[in-house]
Length: 469
Ligand SMILES: Cc1ncc(COP(=O)(O)O)c(C=O)c1O
Image (cartoon, rainbow, N blue to C red):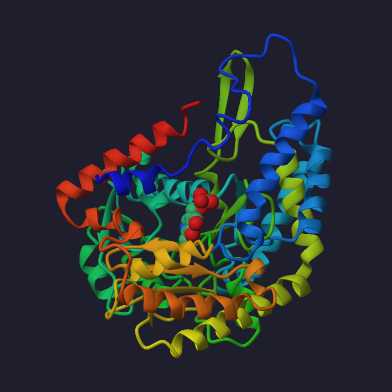
């Protein structure tokens, strides 16, 4: 890795090192809570400034300070409650059963029941998208072993699927087969068909995928799953809480949920477009039998009997309470209005991009717009945008970046300012200040085996650096 790319990789990770006291060990005497709070207030104030401008892609989905203040008030009522101990907190059962039910209704769980009276979409609340995906994959591994005798499980996914699937496959001992996407950046169903064999337990697709926001051809994948009698997970972590409302607004959105008969599980993040606090998500499965595979219990433990629904043990009741409160205060009208504002902004940005011949939108976009260029180096454009305070998400293979539109971008003037800066970014890219773009220096590495290895080592070093004082 070059010095320049290492610098951009590690960035300024320790801005507080020389300004605030470092606690390598407990302070000998407990500090004054007010003094500690003041210190934290300064940090959060500085960090909030980075996204409050509306220039950050994704990440901050709601952005409304009164909304967060309300959720934090709710959180504080149950923050110290352990959801494993339902005798002490029956409220947790109300929150989680209702979160799951509202999510299943939104994703057309009733359609599954109508198709087959053995089916009833049920689910659990997890800690985030990754854990929802982990559980979705896990139930299929257990189902396939129990009911099909598969002991060398494999799963088939498009290359655009989120790395959480690779992580699940890695932890669960499943072989994951990545199939390149087609020229529209959508899952190539014919190629995925060829990758299926007698050890395949499931196929997966996204609604929409993280790199491009694209909805894979899920109807065709559902047909495939049914034909081969295997499972199918739809990753709706990103789109699951916005696409239902975008569809209701009249946009052309193909069915992506339990209306498809082959869909056996779906992940959907309350902590993204569900507008909850960070730390919750929902995973739904097509019937109770599948959910049973997720549950864990131990009857002969000296510590008593133990049961937990997901990978986690103790969990804070505050997060589920806040998620529930976000959902019931938003209501259908709130989600619909948020989707309308986001899509109006996305449409404005798309119209602006259409006036810039050097920039192309990658695939059929909705709330997330991925851009590339066959004229200029798109990473130079990204460097310019970064210099103007924008924070896009870089894509690679092929080079590009995406702008995931959330509520902070719907404030007046932001879409227009983005298009102006994008145009100026294209002009900059035609005559850049330095030949190697900062934001492309890392991605350039992943095209070769050696480069990939260097990059992997660099990422591990970055993770290590996040635990340095
Ligand atoms: C499509 C998709 N799937 C899964 C995830 C993983 O979610 P989390 O980061 O909450 O674990 C993300 C996160 O951005 C995502 O965009």
